[in-house]
Image (cartoon, rainbow, N blue to C red; front, side, top):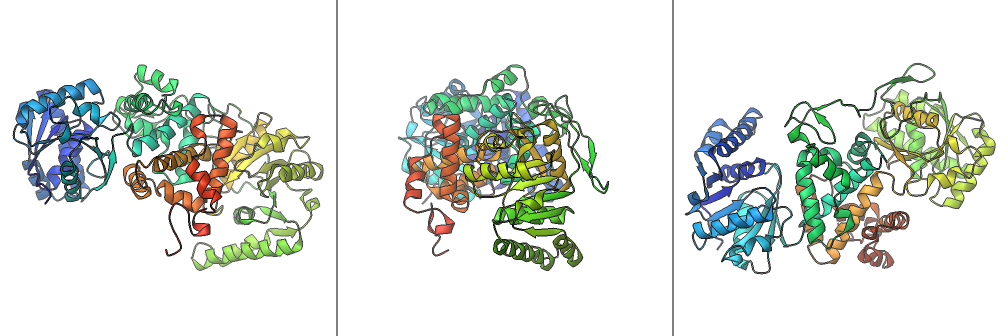
Amino acid sequence: MAREFSTVGVVGLGTMGAGIVEVFARNGIDVVAVEISATALERGRATLTGSTDRAVAKGKLAEADRDALHERVRFEVGLDALHSVDLVIEAVPEHLDLKQRIFAELDRVCRPDTILATNTSSLSVTEISVATSRPNQVIGIHFFNPAPVMKLVEVVRTVVTAPEVVADVEALCARLGKVDVTINDRAGFIANALLFGYLNHAVAMVESHYATREDIDAAMKLGCGLPMGPLALMDLIGLDTAYEILDTMYRRGGRDRRHAPVPLLKQMVTAGLLGRKSGRGFYTYERPGSPVVVPDQTTPPATEAALADGARAIAKVGIGSARSELASPAVVTRVGVVGSGTMATGIIEVFAKAGYEVVSVTRGMEKSAQVCEAVKTSLNKGVVRGRLAEADRDAALGRITWSATLDHLADVDLVVEAVVEELSVKKALFASLDEVCKPGVVLATTTSSLPVIDVAMATQRPADVIGLHFFNPAPVMPLIEVVRTIRTSPESVATARAVCAALGKTGVVCGDRSGFIVNALLFPYLNDAVRMLEASYSTADDIDHAMKLGCGYPMGPFELLDVVGLDVALAIQRELYRELREPGFAPAPLLEHLVTAGYLGRKTRRGFRDHAHR
């Protein structure tokens, strides 16, 4: 039988500690809430009161339940108040010496059978435990912020934590309505080990002026469905906290360079730019502690551009700090799309629905007929689902011309290439487009992995060549990565952004580097998850749970890999490693072995999971 915890102590009443107090009190458990001073204690009480009052205002907590919750909490100054509790959870700042001092004192104060737990997100639970005479009764219970809302708890056992202590804490998590994942004591545990490498990489993109903070955050929200962009999330976590976690993971986790804090992060912390709590981090906020972002000196200007017919105003085609050009977009009314695959079909539909005249070019009339049928089928689905009027469907189809020859692109204003991902094929196509198309036409490639500059240099007009990376399915996904090379003109960038806006898409501008924004940030994270599984640190299910419940991701890494295709993920990861030469980007051997074995994910009914009977 699992141990019954009737009274718990919480040490440290900052945002995290106050949230943990609320979790226990909501679930009928008496809490002794402890701080170092009366002033700190009152701040903690105010945090708890504010949280529960907001829950009442939102209809998520009855007034009577709120009052009963507060009755269960006793606020005290000093650790001596914890002499009779069954469990203590420490939630003080992430400093090992501070935590060790507290645990040594708790060892003296608490009953011999009291379990001592730390809420650390990055420090060694083992190193904390040895400050006591009972390391077998010390465990990590890592709640996620905000604790009353987030479902995940990482239960961290050391090599000497007693099995019954682990079992008792797991049962307690279930009583609290939490989903626990039980893991060994390793730097970053699951969620932070996967999350902070990704966050650090995003900071590096800002530091190198590869893309703006707005474009990086928009790319990851719209391209991956994440609840927050990485830089906004860093501001929420606190840049000082993020720095400490990264520094600890770097020192404890094998000195992986990707966990070495980017110099910009240290500079911002030193300058007091800590994120929301200081009122300024990567973004500027209305006031310290406020979630409301206000414009500052690096906020991109908002300008207006109109298409030739004047019917659609395009907002926010301004070029921000990482794209200093500010040029006028060319008028685009007629678009050519080359290709016959899923992506080409979706792009044709997107342009036609937005009012553009479209010339679809394939390798033969049979292919054209297939693409035409696919576009009709997709548009008809829109009508059936009530998302598109029949008249609009017919008008969109009426704007499309079907062709099997590039010569029909002679009078278009923009060409979008969506052929196979082979550089030789794309270069040959762009050389032909260079001969066919009139001067000034923007030539765009939808490549997701190849260098755009290689394609551009196959033409005599590299200033007019740009990347327009649509995401699949193109009619649904709201993001387009606008990829400029070192030869792309400001006018081509402005035209591409204006077209994105006219399509109702968000265009994010970045340089011509492997993976662009989304894949460069996403796939190393997925590769890290494979390495974690490969090392037998945790299971695929627990890792997926950790990222979905702890970080709010729509899919866990292994779910996503099976959907994307393990062969696709491997090809992208190889390309990233080949270009950037970062050792941490080398594809995980397990990923390579699964691809070699033909386990490619859902499309082969077997990947990290068996989908044959699902």
